[in-house]
Length: 388
Image (cartoon, rainbow, N blue to C red):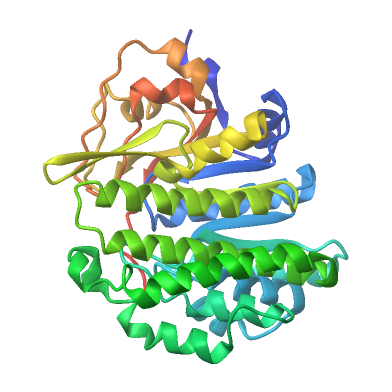
């Protein structure tokens, strides 16, 4: 089989044809990033999303960004609350608000909603964390404010137990568990109260509006997830980083399942978070292993989850070897291609895995091609530094 028989130009018609080739219409269509901050990939993502909205009935977009900050963006595109500059500054984590492609996407979604009754939705689906984590204050107090009495504590009690936010969001906790307060008496009490508040929410669902139910559930998931993450930040055992990595992806997956309840969504995140196979990462003298958010989501959604990995050809002076997957795909005649990954796995014989000079680029694993539905391939791309 010629590799041209596995690929087509990446355009709206190609994306629609790809969707129709799947066993079921995805509720979550994952579009992975081989590397963050590649402008061309963000622009292609925007084109893909516009086609999905205009021709395939998609109404939601989710990105690997703080789920609570994402509410700022969702309010803006659905109601016009705030200004675009403010939303890009406050509505994204990880520096993603400075991305021109993200700004263009938010502007387009807002303009679309001004002209249509059926509104587009925006979601962040990462937790409020990096390797360290934010204070659970916002999630806990917002959940508390939506509940009716009698409640298991007062707001003053929550405030006293939380204390200053900077004792939670201490970046040094990433490498030094002794600086984390996640296993302190106050944190342990907060975990019990968070559990009580989430249980109370289940008893009060009928009195809440649909919007408040959705947000209360998000606040509850986030509060419990953050407190659990902080607990393991304070752990000094060899399992610490395996557990933290797994917890982050589990939080992502829980948020993605909630996004899927709103109807078909395009999900944009690192290939590593959306892949179906187990994640492996060298870490000192260990190799960490955990299941990605995509693998967990598929376990719940089955064939209603689909995954498009992205891959890059030449990036500056970083050129793939001809015997790698990226090198083979670079022979395709199009600048941007959409490849059937499983057919590609049958068409090429024992390709090598690319070694990239860019530590932030994650090459395709030839052994995992049959775990991917499709590949979005950019023959050339400009590598960007982290923005913001």
